Image 1 (cartoon, helix red, strand yellow):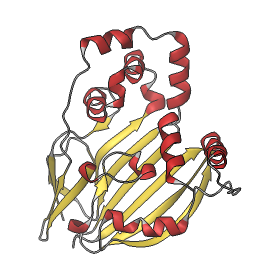
Image 2: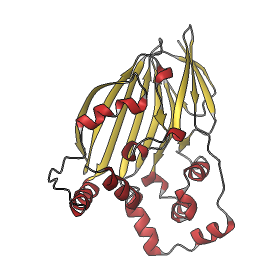
Image 3: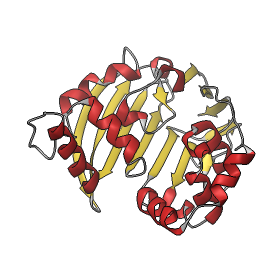
Image 4: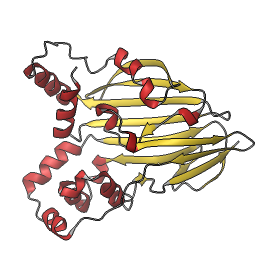
Length: 257
């Protein structure tokens, strides 16, 4: 399906997807990248309708799952990243896929820190990179892309405070199914890290469940403001909301054995 269709509809229905990115790291620096992308059935139906309006003759409702395209996507994560498998997923009114890739050296891997780019394509300036040192313990450094953390301007705060009930309901509908998650999982015990979000053998870089976030009126106001279109500013405010994990350090390290 045409990338233009993905881009336009993703912009129109920004909150209808769920993206989960996991990187499993072995002690020798090899590992597995798993990408799980889900979209609402309503979104996919609209996407198909728009594709037809652009002149596409596609009638396959499952065209979002394209194994050949996922195979080709391996190169965007690194020259030596290999496609392993992919499968179609259907659950809770959502459709999507899970794609698995493998690598021999995590230093050759790069992943996006913007979940919507898993749908629209990667941007070099938003890529997370890695440095790895073998040993006992092994040490992994995670380098996050630099983003300016800005606060909403006064006029934007005023705009957010004037949200009417119709806008509020629209946002609830738009974001109710949106979830994003990204974490690293280690083969062994983590003995030292400067990460803000360790959970056992996992290090979280990002975790947001927008259904829960929408229970906070201030979050709702922020999503409606112009600053909600600024990923850096969005992360800046989200990091202070209970239950949300957003790693803001430019570089973290993990030692494990």
